[in-house]
Amino acid sequence: MTFQKYLVLAGVALFSSAGDSLLARGMKDLGGVSLHHLSSLIFAILDPWVTCGILLLLAFFASYMSALSWADLTYVLPASSLGYVLVALAARFAFHEAISPARWLGIALITAGVGFVAVGPSLTPSRKHGNVPAKVISQEAQS
Amino acid sequence: MKEVYTWAAIAMIVAASTTGDVLLSHAMKEVGDVGELWKRHGLLKVVGRVLATPTFFLGLLAMAVAFYSLLFGLSWGDLSLVVPASASLTFVANAFAARIFLHERVGRRRLLAALLVAGGVALMAI
Image (cartoon, rainbow over the protein chains, first blue to last red):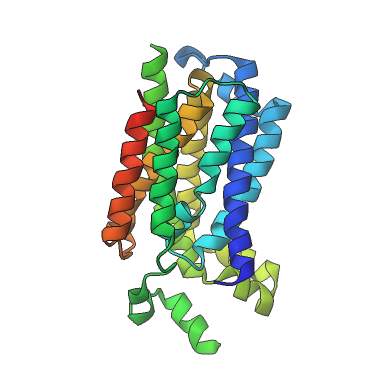
């Protein structure tokens, strides 16, 4: 793992949590969406908060795609778990949502679980021994 | 009714996200290391190779469904419930899906982590 790859994982966590927080801010402005007016979800993207949230989520998507190109899915998701903590902090301090002690404990357990798994290798070794798609094999052969 | 809508949205987010994650991960493994590709052939080559992978678009479609489910969920539930609950349940579902469909090695460590995450989600629903 290079420093650049750790930066990509940090980007996955930061952009995801910031994007989700801005989306939440925008959706609170719009209020509850009824099942009879689902079309209002389409126009929700015109809200400035939702638009900014979408831009950040696009940055998240680019980082996420990059990470998935060199690491297992079951490594990328937990390794970027810091986002859960950031969302909880944003919910508490930016949106003044009440978070009960049970929820704080839940967030701690989730973070511990995903952090625990992130300690292992980033890529399943067997992929290098025959479980690699043809395109990647030809690319490795060229290098 | 508010809680029913919130949890229905969370269930939809988990199903669509897991499908999307598996498809996108499969697509990106076919593309290869994006950083290396960019260094050797430039950004256009990377974009071209990603766009030439059919599972990328299927994954994108599933992610779009997950995104609108998230908007629906956020309009009814608290950010501190909808986002962590859906994300962590997606993590557990992804552990099984990655093992089955992507043949990733999901050993004791990753299974134990899945249990910790599931416990965390249960606490958050109280």
